[in-house]
Length: 332
Image (cartoon, rainbow, N blue to C red; front, top):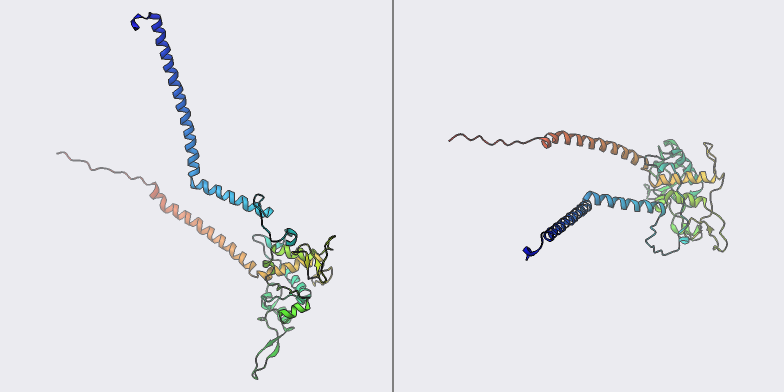
């Protein structure tokens, strides 16, 4: 049947079939190239996702971002919170004050600790105890040995029994702890309208906000806003949870007189007594940072030395070239 076709028709049929085969090969080639490029990209993405380093980096980035956001703003916007009380009942959040001991390598201002102890002794000690601080803790921090001995001897402590089996009074010693203002909890409540003044030894660590909260509380007494009614014996302070606090304002300009000539303003006295209470909550603060700095320097030097020794010992082994020379066969 093909023999009956004219030569021109056969030629056209051959050309059309050749062109179709060429077009089909081009399409398949482009498809293969496209598929190979997309598969290569997919393999690259899969390799990146399967990489442990990439996963660890992404995790650290996410956790760090969330931690930094919560540090700045307190809560995450997409996670609801359940409160047993309203934000007003929790108290106003204190500002972040630049206390000198907050730095990574900063230490306490010991002159401020000395002034703060004076404020505590002349103002706060009338109601609040300091059970965990002994007289000896002040030596070398804010006072000399002779000054602390003189202050301790001003207080009478019950001791004994003596040879007759009786208790007796004696002057205080460096080993004695600060005397409480009340003999027991019931006496403290009776003298303060049923409110119990807390011990101040760990008050900075025991309150959310720490030193910032204590400073804001001492300087935050204001008149109650319109519509707020307080019970008898209570005072309004927006930083205290609920706003109603039994402790009245105790710091006023000039209520104490500093021997070093520092102006005894309300904010200055609050700053000094907060610094003293921060030290009382953590007397080892300065030594801890000093030892921490020494440890960082020591371990950094040991790490650098270990890396050098590791490279010195292992570099010849890792870079050596092992050549196998087969035995040369002898003629038979």
